[in-house]
Length: 42
Image (cartoon, rainbow, N blue to C red; front, side, top):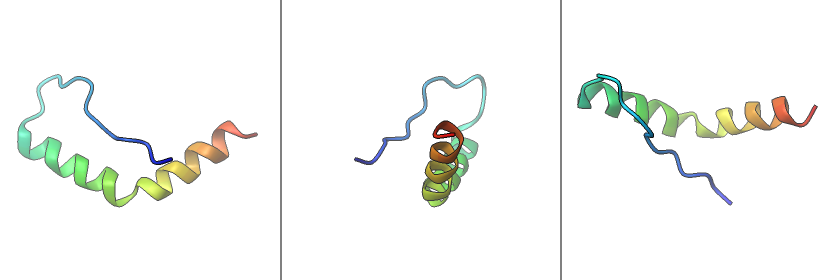
C-alpha cells in the first residue's frame, strides 16, 4: 500500500514553491517512508 501525499493547508506559499516542495517529497518518498518506519518501530 502506497501513501498518498497531499497538501492539507497552505499558509501563504505560492504555487511555484508548492510544486517544488511536492516534487522533492515525491522524489524522496522512499527515503521518507524508511525513516518514518524506523522511527515508529523502535
